[in-house]
Length: 80
Image 1 (tube, rainbow, N blue to C red):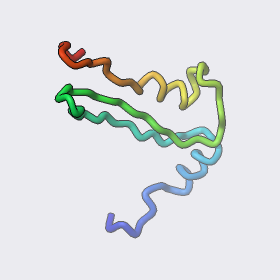
Image 2 (tube, one colour):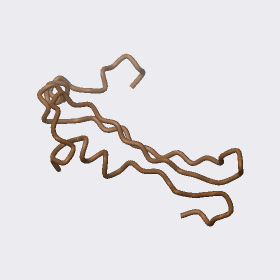
Image 3 (spheres, one colour):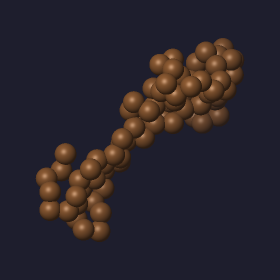
């Protein structure tokens, strides 16, 4: 690809618009705070046109909620 092509096909765009397909963006960030303590944060975002209850296991929100998180590291303690 040279940046001029649409990375999604018409069928994929239609499925996303219909709520039968979703795009997820997931990642993890590691950093040291001002006290030199290492931390991590995991994130998840999604695109959907249908709002489902976060407790519904077919919901993109439920799937993202199970991935996201943060550490509980504190100064002077071993990282978890």
